[in-house]
Image (cartoon, rainbow, N blue to C red):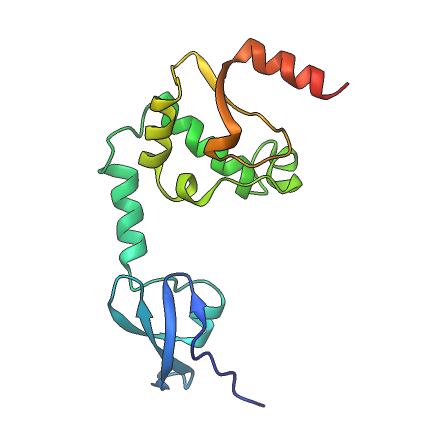
Length: 163
């Protein structure tokens, strides 16, 4: 069986530098450089199956984002952001077939950072009585394709799109 060389490949935030020996189970370990600057070793299986995506900084950053950084976790806007991401990326989500299942995505800057989405929303007329709307129904969630409208307008628009 030929050994798979992972040198130079990216897995999440990790870039494989070189082979780094074997685990106790005789699996190949790889030395990886994380985007944050730290180096770690990881088993090939953990890299390939997605269990190891960073040196640990990703989990730490996600915890900070969820709980500390913006202090807006329990707002209506945060819920709208979270639901937007779910319906575009989670096949188990309600209405996924109408969004992610059709190839609709959330732009990287919004998907990765609630504060960026929040800043755009505040600068573009968000209020708690409005809902996010994609101007081009076949386009992605991104600043140039989104606006805030009332639920009644959204319902009328959806009805018109089906004609």
